[in-house]
Length: 121
Image 1 (cartoon, rainbow, N blue to C red):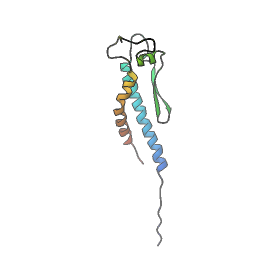
Image 2: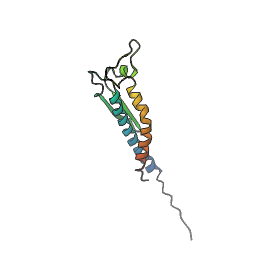
Image 3: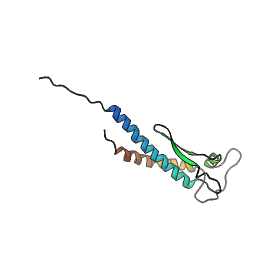
Image 4: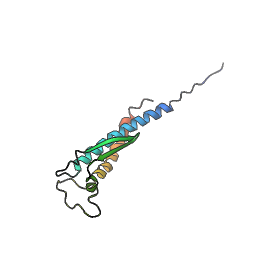
């Protein structure tokens, strides 16, 4: 009696699903970064906070953007000629985007774990 072994290769399905789950986790984390950075972005009269968004650049690549000309100036606290010395709104200041991104590292780990539970392969 001959026995036969059947191998079912689910690696392509696993890879596709893994990319989808990781992409969902990155999307959620980029949204967290956007929300946190909006809370600490400098604000007086301009629309810096309102003209921001997160979008997908490529698979597994998300970006948080601020579309005002002065966003870079505010993020770095000045440029080669000027330095921002006083932010008018308490709790705001330079590095609002970097700080939000640095704080999101723990959220990313949690989001990957959360979305990984949906795995079915």
